Picture 1 (cartoon, rainbow, N blue to C red):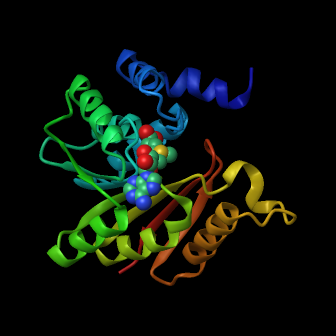
Picture 2 (picture 1 turned 180 degrees about the horizontal axis):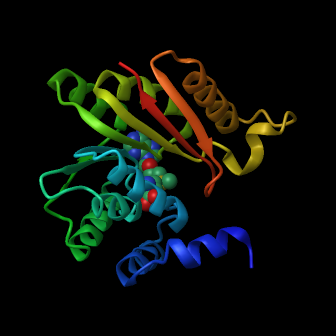
Picture 3 (picture 1 turned 180 degrees about the vertical axis):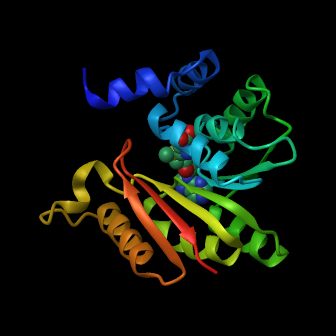
Length: 210
Ligand SMILES: C[S@@+](CC[C@H](N)C(=O)[O-])C[C@H]1O[C@@H](n2cnc3c(N)ncnc32)[C@H](O)[C@@H]1O
């Protein structure tokens, strides 16, 4: 058995609700690019360990990562999820309802950078961020997150190893370069302390120093 499958089997088992999310993606001809269950469990644990109450997600798809995080958010907490595609939001809403988490989640439909601009100007703050949308905007997303982060907030991002392409010096495609730029930004910015966990496609875990 592969090491990742061992971890998933023993520590990140999916229940019916989570498995139904994957089915709903296929039924609606949506890409099956949710985080894997081991990364979902990591998100769940990070939200709990951080005692995060106000979580912001960039990239909802069908609500799979939203369910993992939503289950860790306390009763008086909330998940705000930024998603470009209205159809994805409709599917995510149904799945969050099936998970009994619809009271905790709010979807902001549209380009995440526009939603971020509105959130920043409203003065709303968050103590946990999960970035999992278009790779070209990862640096812009972390810069925006820093503008509405509570001191000590966690900023987590998926796909930061990009299937191993980040270390392949012969690869200079746009998305790989965008991920490299993001990794460089987070590793060098004095407002952040961070590392990459080789879970799933690579999960960046960073903490805001303020
Ligand atoms: C990898 S999927 C998110 C997966 C989800 N986090 C999960 O694990 O269940 C990326 C999502 O980002 C959305 N997206 C892409 N570009 C976006 C943008 N500019 N603003 C907001 N959402 C965007 C896509 O429509 C897609 O639903």
